Image (cartoon, rainbow, N blue to C red):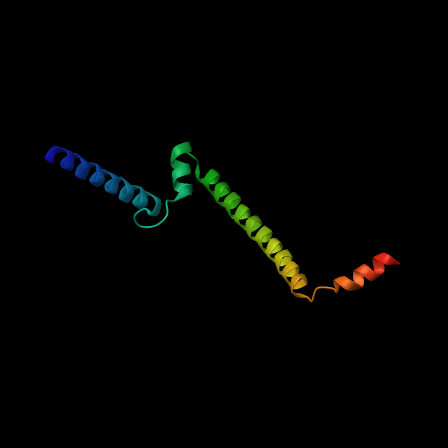
Amino acid sequence: MKSARLILALLLLIAAATTFAQQRGRRGFGGPPDVIAQTRDALSLSAQQVTRLRALLDERRQAEQAAQDNIQGKLDALAAIQEKTPPDAVEYRLLDKR
């Protein structure tokens, strides 16, 4: 019975440690990873290639922001239309009968 409790306690400890380690891995220590440095090191990029990579990432970020702004504008327009008073359903029925 004692060995079963000991095994259960060890399993719970391992599960807790694994969960803690996974959460630490997501959050990291000291901020987000430097994607450009990791890519530079993994691909042995030259300084010119790193500069171009930075430019491409900045362009992508700007394009994403422009797309988000466009979508938000359309959502705002849709919300404004939905806030208007709905038309009278009886009026539509009268028009259909003509």
